[in-house]
Each structure stands twice: as structure tokens, then as C-alpha cells.
Length: 387
Image (cartoon, rainbow, N blue to C red; front, side):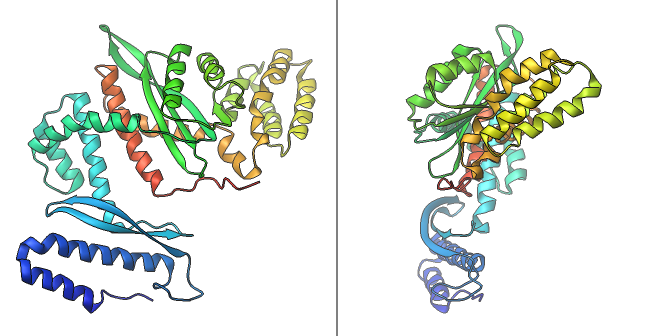
């Protein structure tokens, strides 16, 4: 199945170099990279263009233009697309990793006050290419503009919305405070994951959540049919104000943790956790309600506070049963966002303390942009046609 570059393609490269010498190098590289990516697509599909074979794993789906900066200048590439199989040319991966490393290195420079010369040395080691201190300074000057543009980009129809927050130490008014990093992610009408926005505020108070949610709507967020979050009071009030009537799913993971606080003794914890899991794992809402009624009755005498809490709170974690069965596992908790928060923590840990809210927002945004770029290479997260 595998083929090599055809002689006509090699002839074009040779002719360019013969006619223009090094001036034709960029065009020559364009030809070679474009053809190499076509070959990689054929490998991924298990078939050559127009070839009929039982080994075919998917289909070619045209090309997407991409401009890549190189030492030879800008290269106009045509990135092959596929349908039915995941594919991304490895020839582009190193360049994208380098770009991400540069963004994060510059963002960390902002936070830690590292000299541009040192950042240039670090970035060269990360990226494998030489970066001058002048280039780093220029990148620093452009970074805020780029990050701001990403945070304020237009949004669209997003049926599923997931909200959560984490805290970072920030110096504010001469004191060190824990500032809330508010993050929103969603699943679009096309079934793709999307990091919608981020904000750094002094707390998770209702006013901060409300302003954050309003900013998402101002950017075009609409069509929200289902929201997943923890039960923080400020978020609850803001959610009800900005998304009145939208069904809310309380994160089942956090609910299970909260339930343990109402268990009267440690010996009962495993039994309570098992009973609660039985309710949350029900396939249909009537069955979940029946199981809930059973455990409420079971603990009414031995743990009345627990029974009352379960009866009042567990129904908030059963909204997910109104969704298509194929969507429920991924949308019954905020775990997808928790994983993002862990990656944010891994990157912000080196800072320990941010000098201000803007520096925290800068580094967190750079991390989220990196994750967003990864998600864009795997567009489908949920089949929105599923019943």
C-alpha cells in the first residue's frame, strides 16, 4: 500500500532549487511536506487515494490550509483531513509543541520575573530551535493580546455546560488571598468539547459567577439545555439568574463526598456509599427514585440526619437520567473539568504565589489554550444524534 514520493514531485523540487537556489528552498519544503502528509494520510487510512480495499479504515476528506512559520519563512501547507478515522500529520506535531512551549515559557516569565535571556535559553531547550531574547520580548508583548483574543472569541450553540472553580494564591492589597479561577467548558451541538472561558476573581461569590456567566452569553453562548456543577451557593444563585429554567445536574462525585459528612460513624461509610451508588447507577429515573426511597427508609431510624439529607439532595444528582444513555457517563460529574484543573495546578505549582490576578489569569489561559488545541485534533466527543 505504501508509496514513495512520485518522480514528478521530486522533479518539481529539483527544478525549484535549480532555478532559484536557496531562494526556492521554502517552496521546495512546502512541496515535500505536503506530499509527506498525503503519504501519512494513506498510511492512516490503510489505502491509497481512490483505492478499493478491505483494509481501508476511513476516507480522505479534503485539505485544510495552514500557515507555518519556519526559518525559511512562512510555509503554506495543505493539511490532509480524514473522515471515519483520527489523523494528524506527525510532521506538524513538533512545531505545534514548540509553539505551545514558547507560550507557556513566556507566560511563566511574566509570573516569575525571569529575564528574557534566561527564557530564551529555556525555550531553546524545550523547542529545539534558537530563540533570541528580542524574539522573547516581542512574544511577551504580543502574548496578552493573543490570550485576550482567545478568552473573548465568539461562542455558539452549546447544549451541555460544565462549571467549576479552583483556587490560586494571589497577592492582593498587600495581603495573600486565595483567588478563584472560574472555568467553563462545554459540548457543542456538533458533539465537540470546547473550553469556553476562564476568569480569576477574589472568590466564588454569586456576583463573580454571575459576571462570568454573563460574559459567556455576551460572546454568543446559547442553546444550553443542561448544566453540570457542584452545589456551591454562589454558583447556584448565578446559574439560576443567568440560565433560568435550564436543568441542573449536581456532580455525583461531589455529592457522594458530601454524603459522608452525614454518616454518624466510620463503620457505616462503606455501606452508605454502596447504597448511594446503587441509586446513582439506576438506568431510569423511576427506578432511581424507588431505590432512593428504600435507603431513606433504611437509615431513618439509625441515621435520621443522613436520611433527611439524602432525600433532599440526591434528586439533584439524577437529572442526568433525562439525557440519552450514551451521554450519561460523561456528563454525570464535573470530572472532565477536574482533570483540566489538575493540569492547571501542575503548571501553576511552580509559581507558588502570583503577584496579581492578571498574572494568574495569564498563565492559566496559556494552559487552557494548549488543552484547547489538543481537543481540536479530536473533534467528536459525543454523538449528538444518539437516543
